[in-house]
Length: 325
Image 1 (cartoon, rainbow, N blue to C red):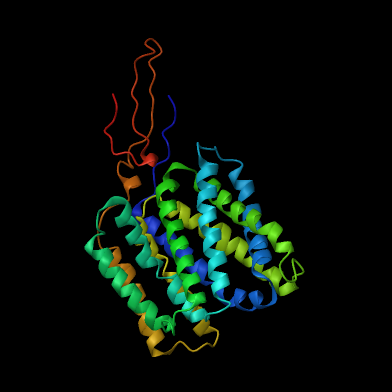
Image 2: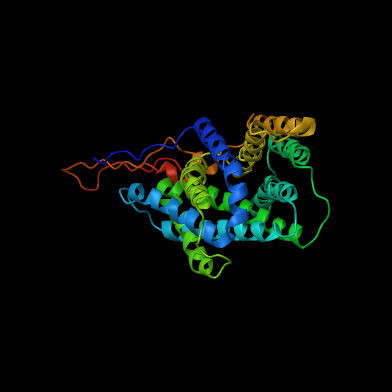
């Protein structure tokens, strides 16, 4: 008799782990803010994501590989790469507040991608959560001052970050989360590595930049993207996008603790985003991978009859088929 495949986590645990991912992403704001002024983007991204890969590799190599994990990990990594490059390029001609507002409009893009793919509208609670989230984002970031090249590039970044959430929602349930996260990080790091040598300054970082890259590599890459991958096995994409809006909230709160002015509008915006997270999680459909999550793949062999036995469905593949006799 083989051992049952470990069951999926509960949706509640998935929500908390996604919230942790949002906090980890937001915690990098103060550290990275000064570092990116002293280092070119591509070498910084290369070092950050290769450090994340190095952290994940010792754990990943001990875990079993799964079919197509490299293909899926590279695909998810390429969407991340496109998002980071477009966002950073856009920042050259737009403000950080405008960039933040447009980037997090992914909360709208994710359900739109879902509707285009499935022809099924999101649950009402998710739609209400999206409206609250956009209003909160506007108050927290100040919205946008105009539309130009930088803003259009950032819209592209928001699309690819949203696509990354959708891709993870599709493939995360099929693979070990640590291994899948490692392939994503490796893809971004490798793609940025060689071009990084030709960027202004290359890899001649000062100590502060190296610290920021290491901090981001461990917390906002290895840990945070693992949290996303682990949790998106059970949390639907639209809800995941809303929960991840805790990133700008945590960045704003940490900034306020460090002495930056949040203001009444920013505080109200943060509260609206928190309200959107609560509303989005009041109900709605379960993630497809969670359907049948309690089913595990088990084959019981009768030594006297090789054709006798019981197969049950692997819940991690998102199957909603009944047990197969």
